[in-house]
Length: 353
Image (cartoon, rainbow, N blue to C red; front, side):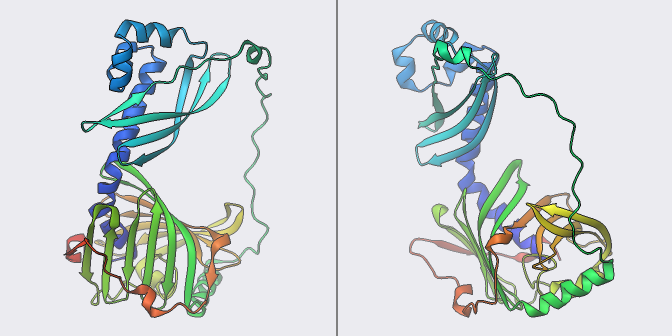
């Protein structure tokens, strides 16, 4: 069992439940916007809230929406937020005159189906006269190389291992991204880590999900779903941390992976050393990975991995939020039972050796 497998277990079992409604909203919003771009007013009408259908017939709606002075030719959804029976989709629209509008598309849950409140957009005539011309094309800029020492692979690994022994605990903001069951899942929250095998992940966006381990028991909880799982992880010898290359896991990397130094790169303006890892073991849960090692913190601030089943994951640490050796108490890595929460047993052997 590798650290990434714990994340996969959590997401496969819990994340899909609180995100289901958000995925539905995303699809309905996309369908509505696509119909708008293709001037399919009948399809748009089918997706409208009941209040709007009661107010306008199909033909009346088509006449009103088609005669608006702002008619988009491109549409992009920036974000989706769901709150019980209502939802909002932030969208960016552009018309044929290159006018850009950032709007909020509102949706309501009507008898289990998400419906749209339409946008009737008008543009003052003055706005047409002040449309900025498109920017002149510029030559692409070459990728920058960080001005940090050019180390060889052995030097990088030595520093990574040494740093692993120095870090007793760590706190940081993190982001996790992966396709799960056909959905693109992106979660952000807070991470706590304490050597050798205690960790806590409290995701807050877009769903509230916690993963907590004291090194003996792993708890996975989604308060909104009133659902949680508990697993015995005391026999998982390699479950040292949730991030490959952090803490004691750095020592085992050369045993488990063929490692290639890929060069120096920036990650969110932070200079890093990039490593490529390929598993030496045929049935290893994570067959390939890439690490970006921060040249100042000497921890991986970005990890991209691929499981033996082809599932790709990305885990990023927000470097400016990192706090090291703050003296985290052991009690932070114990799950506090919540009223009304169903905590079910979880067999971790279902997720690999």
